[in-house]
Length: 291
Image 1 (cartoon, rainbow, N blue to C red):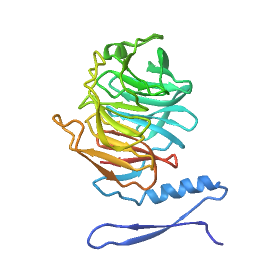
Image 2: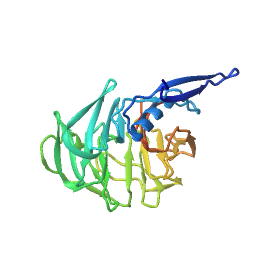
Image 3: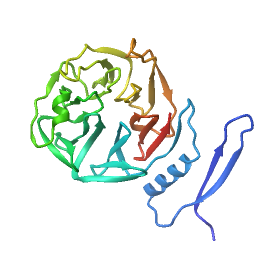
Image 4: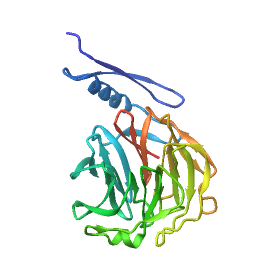
C-alpha cells in the first residue's frame, strides 16, 4: 500500500552540513487548503532563519489575521473576526464580539469591530467606548491609546482617560495632524506610522496631552509598522517582506537603516515583545521567532 506524504529535507548549518530527509504521512480526507497548511507547518519545523532570528511554529488559531504583543501578553484576531488571548501555548476566545483588530499594552486591551466601533476589555468583557470610529487601534504607548480612521485621520486618547475607562461612556479623543493608515506607539522612543502611499513616519507623542513633536519621514515603504516595548521597530512591505529598523537610540529615535529579516513565506502582520517576533503569514499561520 502506498502511503501519501511529503519528504522534508533539513540542512543543518555549519562546517559539516548534513541533509536529513523524513517522510511525513498526510491524513486522508484533507482538503487542498488543509494539506497546504499541514505541509507548511511540517516544513517550518525544520527551518532556521538567519540574522540571529530563529522561527518556529507558534500556537495556532487558524486562520490568523492580526496579532499584537505587549508587556508579556499576546492577543490576536482570526478569520472569523474573534479576538483571542494567549495563555501558555493555548489561545482563549475573548467573548463573542466580532473584532477585526485588537491591541494590548500599558493602556490595557483595546479593539475595533467590523463597524469601526472602539472597545476596551474590562473585567472579562469588551466595553464599548463611544466617541470615535477607528479602523485600527494601538495600546502600546506610555498609557495613551492611538488609532486611525478609514479616512486616515489620526486620533489619540490621553493616558489618564484610557487607564481610567471602566464603564460605557463617551470619550474625548484628541485629533493629531497628519494622515496615516496604520499607527503604533511604544513607551520608549516614540511612535511610528505609515500612510496610504506607504510612506513611513516617526513622531513622539506626549501621553498626558497627546501632543506630538512633529513628523519625521523615514526612508523606505511599508504597509504596516509595529514598535515593541523596548523601542524595536519592524515593518511589513506590500510584497510581504519584513524589515527591522537599525540604529535606534535616545539621540536618533528614528534610526538609521533597515535590515531585511528572511521569512519562509509572505508575511501579513508582525508584532514584537520581549525578544519574540510574532508573525502572521499569508497562509494564516502564526510563527514565533526568537530574536
